[in-house]
Length: 193
Image (cartoon, rainbow, N blue to C red; front, side, top):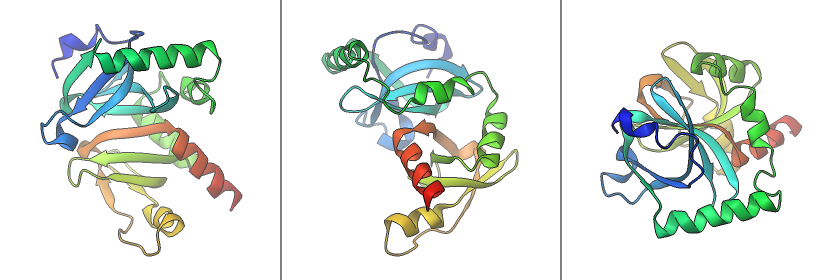
C-alpha cells in the first residue's frame, strides 16, 4: 500500500474495504470493513464493523500487508447506511470499545502491549508465518517477541490443545486486535472463572 493514499482515508466517514495480501493470497476476497482511525508506526489503526454495522474491534493492520482499499462500492454504501442508522439509534458501540480505545489511542504500541501485559488483557493477532489468529492473554513480552496464553484459550473452547504458547516475533504480526467485542467477552469470562 502506498503511504500517500492513506491520508485521504484517515477519519473519513465512509466505510472502507481493506484487503490483506497475506490472508487472501492476492485474490482480493478477504477484507475488513471499517474506518481508518490513524497511523501507528508501521500499522494502521482501523475501527472495524461487523455484519450488522456495529463496532466490532480496533485492529492494527500492517501497512505493508494491505493490498487494496476500496470505498464507495455498493457493499460499502450499504454498510455506511447500517453504521449511520446504528449511530442514530445509539446502538453502534454497545460494548463501549471506543471509550476503552480512547485511553490508548495516542500511546506507542510498546506502551500498549506493556499495559496489556500488566492488566492481563486478551488480544488476537495474525502472523505472516502461519496466517492464523492467535488469541489469549499476553503472558510474556519483550521488544521483539510476544507470548499469548493460547493453551488456556484452547482449553476453554476446544477438547484438546493443538498449539503451545509460542514465541511470536513482532515483525511477523500482520493484524493485531487491540480491543474487540469477542476478546472483551472472553476476558470477562476469564476474570470470573
